[in-house]
Amino acid sequence: MPALSASAPGKIILLGEHAVVHGRPAIAVPVTQVQAKAIIQANPSGERGSIQIVAPAIGLDAEYHTLEDQHPLRATIQLTLQALQLTRVPACTLRITSTIPVASGLGSGAAVAVAVIRVLSTFLGKPLNDQQVSSLAFEIEKIHHGTPSGIDNSVVTLNKPIYFLRGHPIETLQVPRRFMLVIGNTGIASPTSLTVQDVHVAWQENPNRVDAIFDEIAHNTQQARTRIETGDPDSIGPFLSRTHHLLSELGVSCNELDYLVQAALNAGASGAKLSGGGRGGNMIALVSSDKANLVIQALLEAGAASTISTIVRQHST
Image 1 (cartoon, one colour):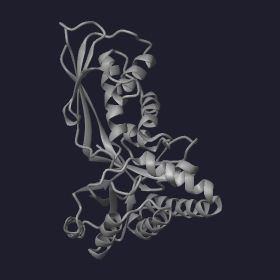
Image 2 (cartoon, one colour; image 1 turned 90 degrees about the vertical axis):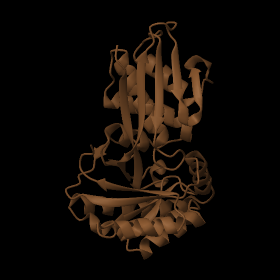
Image 3 (spheres, one colour; image 1 turned 60 degrees about the horizontal axis):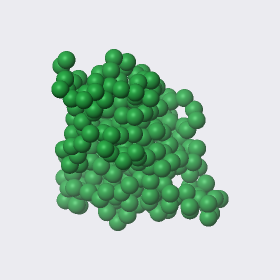
């Protein structure tokens, strides 16, 4: 049997991070310039039920049963087998690679889970649909993030821009006019679970203040959705920049993010903000095509470890 493969994109949150965990809307878009990929190959000489996982980026080469129960890759495989109502599988080797930076807000954990679920279910002759894949990936997100919103697994599975409100059906964002984002990576790993927990503690201590911040973030998100869907994405810059200040008030920015955001604005970006958990990871800048290179250069000079340019469009390919 020939090797099978599946891939999944990274993602970036345009607006609504942290507030989305507390019942407000968020907008997220796929970032196809980075990908997680899973390749599976039957191993005829292997013992039935054996799945050898090879993930060079994290120095892993082990049979999945030997991993801890809460290891995300072991959990992904076990949940997939449970969903397929299978207990034993043909011996195989699962190789995982990814160009998505870890703990940077680009959805690395969700992308790896989605790619593995898809390739394993296909290998076993029972490919799962998008809803099933996303639901399983959400369970893995709980291992990574503790109390995830569900936005990462949703946008990564669908590979389309989405408008997300927890507890409501996913809405595909209409993007009649494409627009460009430049993503700047601080190079600082920052697990989302920690910042989410800290924001939750802040909310418990002063719910009125934090809810007011969440409400303004929600307003910015809704206004941006309207502008994007009516073909005026260039006007959402102020909503991005204002949201960055609000996230800073929540304590989830850091000097490096603030510096990159200001550098992007100084170079001609129409709006910029941190994206994701914060305290490291990535920021995003809304740019016109003629300003993209200037903003990229400014971010690198300001200390960005790397940059990515991505076009937000109706259907990602």
